[in-house]
Length: 246
Ligand SMILES: [Ca+2]
Ligand SMILES: [Ca+2]
Ligand SMILES: [Ca+2]
Image 1 (cartoon, rainbow, N blue to C red):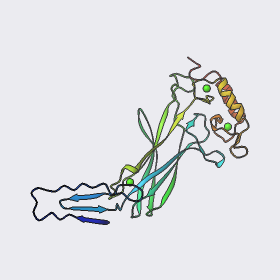
Image 2: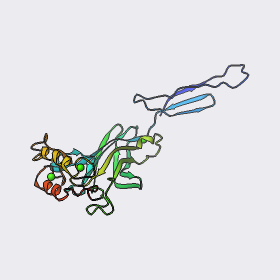
Image 3: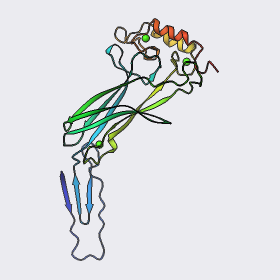
């Protein structure tokens, strides 16, 4: 839609072409409004078609409670969950695909694609993607050494809709996933006393019944509670972290 048309009339007598310099036009969100400039005209247009990824949250959902969890163990009983919010920032109803990907030094890994149908102008929609915790190479034998722990950048992508010009916001990189050795609460590559201390502090913690005591980093099976099953995993890996085995 054309918002504004500026027409520049040259002086009657002009020895040389005039140059007009203008700042970008911004909308109320501070985003640049596209302009077509040609000889004597500037057309200011509102983008009609524009979808965007606006938020990403990563975690797990034991006992029906979502926990933001950028650190994960290969012993989780539940899948990873990535919640993505997308918005139709244009003026037309849009249908498009949204993908969640993990990225590390070796490449991009698509973890799921969902279709959004007929999203109204100005509307947002929340999508949930689930996938298994990425592998921890070397676990449990530490051959090859499972250190440093693999980390992945999480990002989401909304496919470009016909007529869309503002494509920079169709991608959002937000959040890291680190896959760790079970028992290594403090990420130092060892399963030793500094891990037992926070574990003892969160013992009996429960995401529903005792959330203030619950620490997801001590929930090695991610069942929403710090109980015997976690203690068994801590004991099994005691002094067997990737750097304990060197
Ligand atoms: Ca866009
Ligand atoms: Ca440790
Ligand atoms: Ca547990």
